Image (cartoon, rainbow, N blue to C red):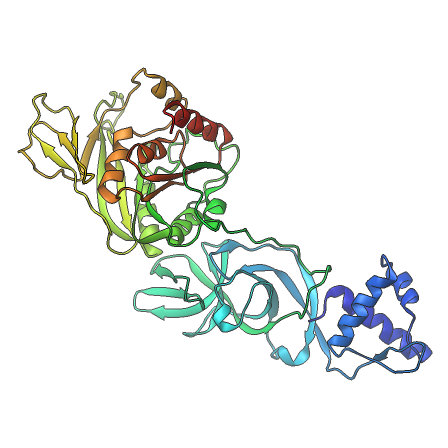
Length: 472
């Protein structure tokens, strides 16, 4: 493959040789192209010779000749493409020269630099350049450039199956991306060929940096950053449980960062273990008398990328204040329970008849991790339903004062009940939008590892302060 600068060197040598009958010196090339040094010229000349674009004539002062190499065609190198999890394409347009024989006639062709290792079994490696024919259809088994939700691009093998589309990596360590009917996915092109540069150099077409992976998870840590980027540093299939709540109420300030729901959902699918659970606590806001239904749109998205909708639960807010309006007071949120396959752990919460009416009180935690509770008007030992009721309010303790500096929190018992239901001691609990750290606090209290992440530095410091208060 020839870079833009190398093509300029080759053109200069060819034009100069045609006019004068001999090649220019290295110093003449340096001056004409305004290069930094003669050594830079030497580097480009050696690359052109290695690619058989230039020949060598021994025993002559100017030992450069034009090779009879086949004609070259200029095409655009548009940016990078992920051979891994989808990334947003980087539009750094360059021009490269490739042999004309690699370009089909009457075809729009472009090039992309590969980042990642999901296609290594097809001999497409990190740093390679792929030639792509622009088209919107593909046959099963073809290597395609796919665009997800109109902004996330990925390189995978394409398979259209009954009721779904599967984008299959060529790496046994990685799982496919599954999209059910109705998901916004489009084919941008078919891979024609792979071009690899032999050796390394200090001159590159594009500057790119792949996220360095952790050798192990950053356990028991609160990370300030975008959850989509943070999850890219996690090993795949490493998280047991997620309990989180996305920003649907417009109360939280994310300092200008937009909420990338699709990126977070796809990232969660990659990092969740088989049998892992995502608890997605979300409500619907009402604007001008019209309910948004954001919650179910998000649930269908999770289902579309491969999660099972294991349960749809209700979080009922016991002490919701009455609001005068033309509709009934909203006193609940959804708790969607998504599973990656069948749940590997389920410790059903139990109930006992309470002496204190409807009040939910701690009863006993046995060694098996099952949390016993008291709940009025229920028969002894009756399993709890999927409607859970919690009081929301300011308790007045130092921990409450710290937590309530965040504008949108859910009760500690809500997080704890899910942690005890879906995990066992030593499992890893992750909250990608941890806010004041409620999930992290309840995970470590119950002897689970936690990882918290938030885009807001203020909330990260708030969580650390809250955990420090409990020496956690």
